[in-house]
Length: 144
Image (tube, one colour):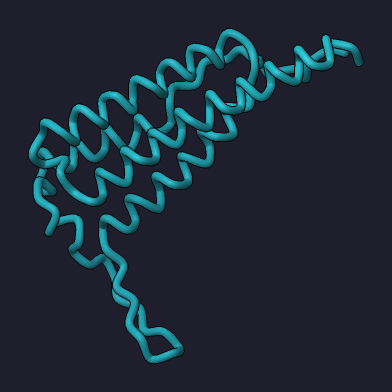
């Protein structure tokens, strides 16, 4: 059976969680260097219950990062040489996040900590999926 035309399974896609890491660092350089800036409200929504929901810059950043984490977990289900490179790069993103969180002052925020935990979840999920797939291949011995 041939793979679908126009789809290359070994196509390289960089780690999606590197994008929020880069955006966070750029935003920190241009005015979001402290935790208070991340908590500044973007909008306020009155709820039917009478409560008021305040949506902050940090909330939107975390939400977009979670969507990218979902894409990363989907990417981790690929097999082949590209998946090994993808796991290595995801691990590098996590290590960069960890070092930055521990050593850089503007990264000591809850928003960055949540981004770092997402990078850790990506690494763990990627290796878990790979190990489970390898165990399944060994168990069935490639018999269809």
